[in-house]
Image 1: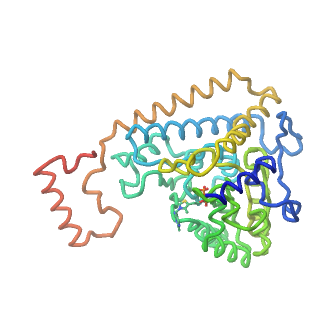
Image 2: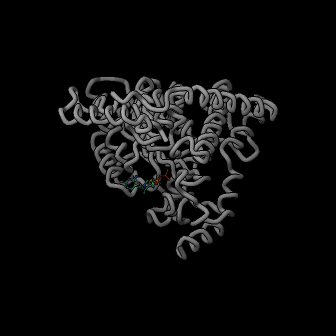
Length: 394
Ligand SMILES: Cc1ncc(C[n+]2csc(CCOP(=O)(O)OP(=O)(O)O)c2C)c(N)n1
């Protein structure tokens, strides 16, 4: 605990930039933090890779993502869902990257990128059904809540075991290249995941074989209660690319335009046969790790407040204001619409039966149920017939 406090104090001395590198040396210069939106909201038009319409659209996606996260935490607190893990403060990183990819590209998320699934067409009510594990849940209640997949949108299942999605993305991209498909895979992970074996396995293989993959690191400063500085002695995450002979970049992850432009560059490199990119998006996890976490136990309110002031939604709002595309009253309207959209989705989801049919308990496990499964199912049916509360959700 003492050590964490020392780290926080050091961060504050540096202008409270926990995730902007642990030192002031060579690597921060070698991998400069790229930004597009200036503090006053202005941007160099030559650096902007989104049309006005796309920029407004993505702003609305960020607002929706925020609303979803806030509402789902409320549902968890009310006991209506069991668990939630959101991306408050990381919206520009998630949406800037997914919007920089093409529809044919497969996405390999960690566990905070729900906005990516929604952006790729997963209906919001289906997402909520998944959280409820009810009859509308496409995972049939087999997954942990908050572990959605959306195959139609090429969004692979959320992956809780740290960094396992990295070699999976590399493998999928390799397969696509062998088949001659124009597909670049995108995978997301936290900075903590760059200490895990699978990150290294994936990065190494992708480097050797020049695999078309965008490795997007959401450097949000914390791996649950472990600060970035205790996670890795690297000054930046981007510099880890050097060890694998791959391209690395570091962008301001709270600047949607910077993230989008960097993703386009990374995708282009991959598609052109130049191999993977490790894209470090410097952002901050403003809330707890998940609904099971209380970050007040291990970090100061001061640090969090300083990051709230750097909110990616405010930043994008300033840009759109500078462009005269969105005024404060428009934001209020967008917010109200997002709220309504989420309210309707929750209503629709809660109208489903609270559990998937009992027959689906073993669905998708074996092509033909095993005798043991048939026996267990018969036993369960008998128990439900004897006392229907056996099947009740709570
Ligand atoms: C292999 C494995 N070890 C440990 C965990 C427990 N765990 C869940 S999230 C997490 C921290 C991950 O931090 P980071 O990669 O920085 O991502 P963030 O949560 O900050 O987005 C840990 C240790 C796990 N899910 N999988």
